[in-house]
Image 1 (tube, rainbow, N blue to C red):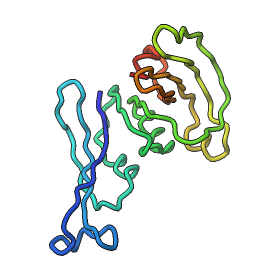
Image 2 (cartoon, rainbow, N blue to C red; image 1 turned 60 degrees about the vertical axis):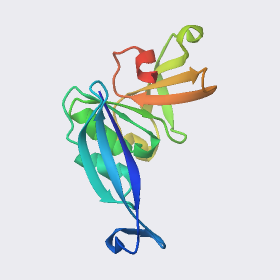
Image 3 (cartoon, one colour; image 1 turned 90 degrees about the vertical axis):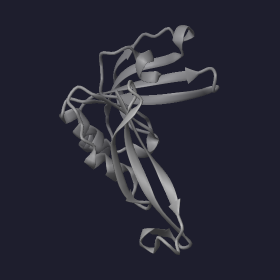
Image 4 (cartoon, rainbow, N blue to C red; image 1 turned 135 degrees about the vertical axis):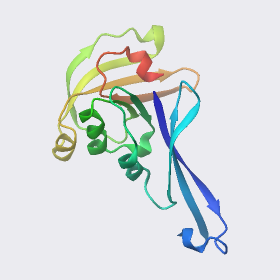
Length: 166
């Protein structure tokens, strides 16, 4: 199981003029693939700070059967579909209002673990259905400690919904 995220490292514009990303700022972005079980970064990709996070998804050395956890900044259906095509798995928070139809709505006991819904969906938007033509799993989870509801998407249809939410 891997988590992928980035951090921007600010640099002095006078010294690092080649790393300009705002009018008065310089910086680079470090994209890190972090193996959760071992607490070890396994892949680091450094770009200009102005490079969008989604573009870094193209250089990740994906492994068949591995799980990749992304935050909403990496929400790109075409790139997520590429992960699906190599038989790897992803979990990502849903971004925006997706158009979809529910294919299967699994019964959940949300009082027990915070999972409000566990659905298999098919995207119905013209562009989104082209970018991700297969079914997705959509899990709605209520976090009591944050007093907030989260919606996750995954291409894994087998593992328990609570595992995806956590």
